[in-house]
Length: 74
Image 1 (cartoon, rainbow, N blue to C red):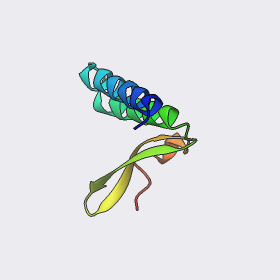
Image 2: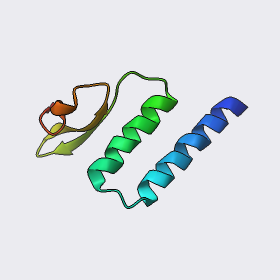
Image 3: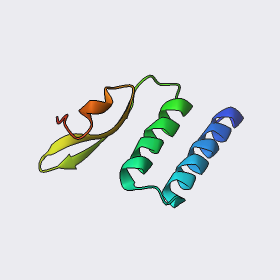
Image 4: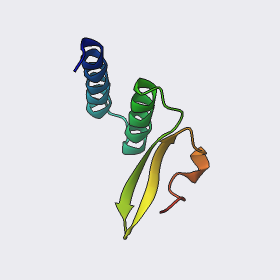
């Protein structure tokens, strides 16, 4: 791993630690996680899907329509 990659990974982990340690509600934490990861990877879209009742449900997104959260299922 290059030094730049190690620094980026450390920044991501620090950001995720701060989000999880915050008193923010679960949905807010998920929203912050997709922002941190999407920004770190310089990605236009970053989403979290969770398995619920046998299908994947969109729980948080950066770059997709926010109205699709908890509506979109795969």
